[in-house]
Image 1 (cartoon, rainbow, N blue to C red):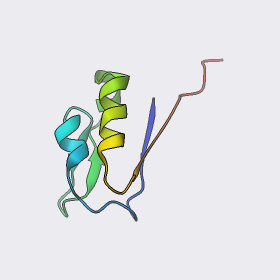
Image 2: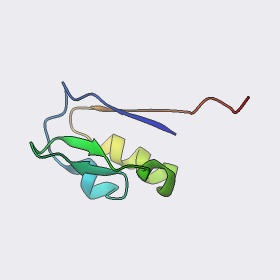
Image 3: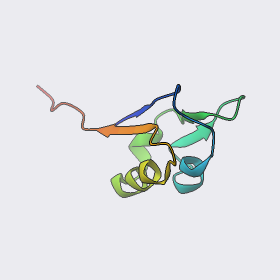
Amino acid sequence: MKIRIDHGTCIGSGQCTLTAPAVFTQDDDGFAALVPDGARTATPRQVTQAALSCPVQAIALGNDPPDA
């Protein structure tokens, strides 16, 4: 699963971090950041819930392209 954070939209509410702490963290300024390889350890449901919890919809989800 691909996860993209729109850093221009993020307000640092931390809801994603609370919902899926294995995937999301907050940078030094308090804005959302991805935990390295975190998307591989979380369930799609956790990531989806985290995206839905964002009050400004700064998290976009997508699928990885199939292996060729």
